[in-house]
Length: 141
Image (cartoon, helix red, strand yellow):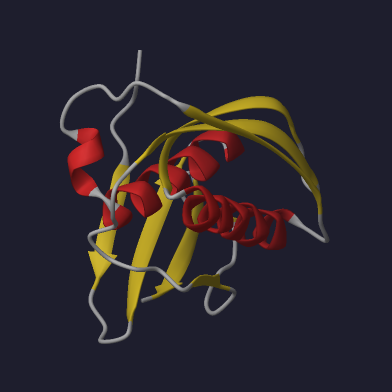
């Protein structure tokens, strides 16, 4: 059973700011991947997409915040180099400073929007008052 996600877009001129709240690290990473995909090419999500791209990502980082930003930048790098939109993540391992996962995606002709980078600006994974993990992800458009 999937729970309701809490996502709010905050407007700005040269970037997209997403405030994400989730109950687990896995869901925090998954929503980040999905939303980057939606910005790159929303129509991929109109029908259940069939994956024709799969990439393994393995990262070790300083902390959960840095790990999340680096992971999303890896997804973005593979989106650009493979001209693909990634929409799902299969985790082999996720911890405070390490992630091993497969990202699944679909090749596309072109992107609707270009994302230059996932920035560290304002990103801080923390537990909020209701016990949910929360962060702000800023995408440089």
